[in-house]
Image (tube, rainbow, N blue to C red; front, side, top):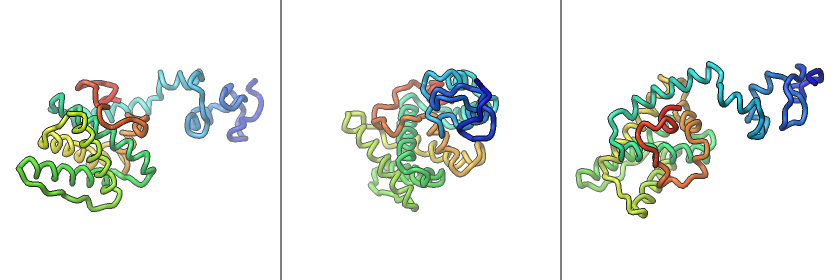
Length: 218
């Protein structure tokens, strides 16, 4: 074992027994194509080891993301925090359905417009502020759906709380490129945090208490 050519790249020698391919693959393909091009089973020892002991570069990225998010949610009440998580799950799910068309500037555009609508409503004025870009408008519709679903469950947030958490989300989406790098850095961060968001019901998903490391600190 380990002498045949890697079936994935066809160049390097196979060094690791791959249960997905039924043959030995090279360490490079195992590390770079895992769960991307190769459908690894959950009991693969190399997959388990990578999850338990991520590379230093991955660990540093997670720590940077954790510090970034901790600053964003600082000072939120428990109720506001739960609303914040709800919106992030909704955005993550929408991003999956929108494929690669949703960028951080669209997220900022959408949540900024919706925040302005709730800020206006908190003053007793009904006026719907519009997002400018089409991807942002589509996201607004999903976020409104999440809020309406909460209402149907009998959980009606205050307009001021909705506006607060949406402004925090806008801040995150606008600052992510500088702090984390890339015009979809925040979208990708949410994808990492909520990998199953596309299949989750949006209301009721934000049940973690403030400070939960599973939600806030990757």
